[in-house]
Amino acid sequence: DAGVTQSPTHLIKTRGQQVTLRCSPKSGHDTVSWYQQALGQGPQFIFQYYEEEERQRGNFPDRFSGHQFPNYSSELNVNALLLGDSALYLCASRSLQGTGELFFGEGSRLTVL
Amino acid sequence: KQEVTQIPAALSVPEGENLVLNCSFTDSAIYNLQWFRQDPGKGLTSLLLIQSSQREQTSGRLNASLDKSSGRSTLYIAASQPGDSATYLCAVQSRFSGTYKYFFGTGTRLKVLA
Image: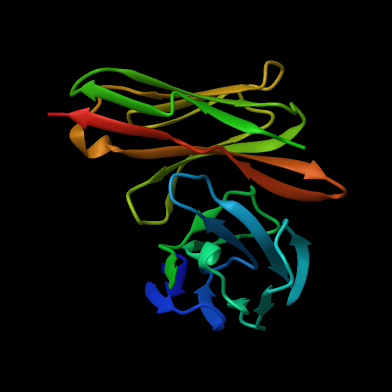
């Protein structure tokens, strides 16, 4: 049973560029959420997708956008990258009808130069 | 807004000690509480989930308790080992504006010395 998988694991971009991160949820899960984690901090909620629609959004600008596909996988897009966007980006999945337990992937480490 | 605090921020102990990590939250109307482990630069691994109707959950050497009325949870680690060294995060799921959201603490960084 594959867990949550994310790609790429590491990437380096320059200011102003755009990035796309990908996530495949745990088997049987239909809800995907994205988090940003700065060094030494807890994860900060970006948004959650269910049935291919954004259902909740945290306090992040419109430069952060996402998508969920019919197979429940998801993408996180960040436009016009800033130095402050450097962080570990975590994807989590759960079943909307389940216990609410979250399962996380290994994350994508983004460095913006 | 729900705020989650974890104390202590860091802890260093000799191998074999029993440990207690604390998590407090400001709004007691929670749906569940989940404890995670995070190794440096890695994702979060789920340790224990406690539903709002439960008082505790156990898995191996780990025991987590929940006291909703006082807004507290504790993670007890028995007979600590060097392999337990990691950051431990708690997350509370609360209902706001008709939807459920997760709120994370900043974690307790644990180091178990051999």
